[in-house]
Length: 188
Image 1 (cartoon, one colour):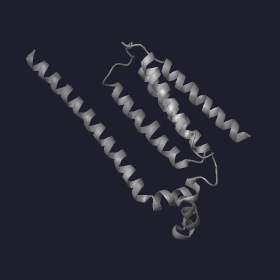
Image 2 (cartoon, one colour):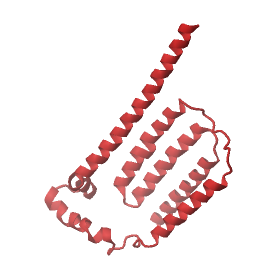
Image 3 (spheres, helix red, strand yellow):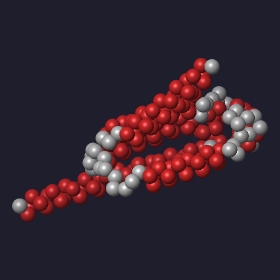
């Protein structure tokens, strides 16, 4: 009963945060609320026993994304401009996409179903052989670090490469601004 209360509370806060993000016009506030949304998502994922996904959401969603959005705000305006189009077309696109996603979940097995493909496939073998193969007591650790080690290393390389690419783009823009300012000073 307590678990259900916590899950519903976190989900309600997620929805309230999403509505606050939609209503805000100041982009700094939107960035902060997006970080709060990611942290709430991570907390909800922890309560749903998806700790590895929660770590990723906290690191990427709340950490790296917030830093990148704040870096972007230094290069742009801090207040959202009024849209030139009506909000009905984006609302229609979001509604159709949401309906397609909900339709896609109808074929999914029930939460916690012991006969779900994820439970009877390779995960069952990991759970059975893991303690003997790895001698590590934490299931998530031995699956991520050993069985899925190459996958985790690849994901880390992709995130690292994306971060380095964004930092290079930002430093290039700053270098171009400094050069432009220097050229203007030399002309005047």
